[in-house]
Length: 95
Image (cartoon, rainbow, N blue to C red; front, side, top):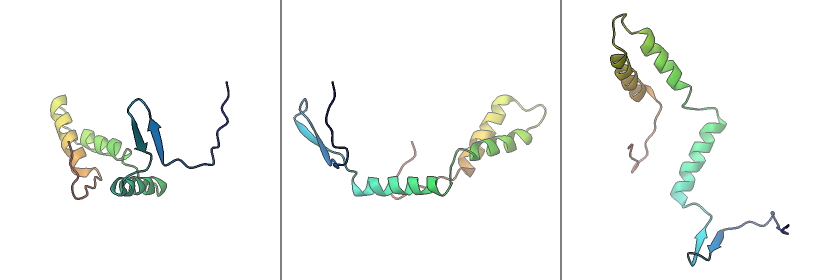
């Protein structure tokens, strides 16, 4: 079975008969702004992930020979939270 679909046509909403509702396919302005900011950071090469191995390596290098592994994990977690480039906008929460 094939369908003739015009992919050049832009859809702004989709009807869901089971719910009896029309759902918008556009983002609210505040969500779109967050999305655009995240995409912009990806395009300029700012990624958070490579930060973690660097933080982990520094905390591992600074451990004492007799330091318990759980103590190191605690220091690593504290370093991660203190050094990760996290930006919170007004109204955002970390959970």
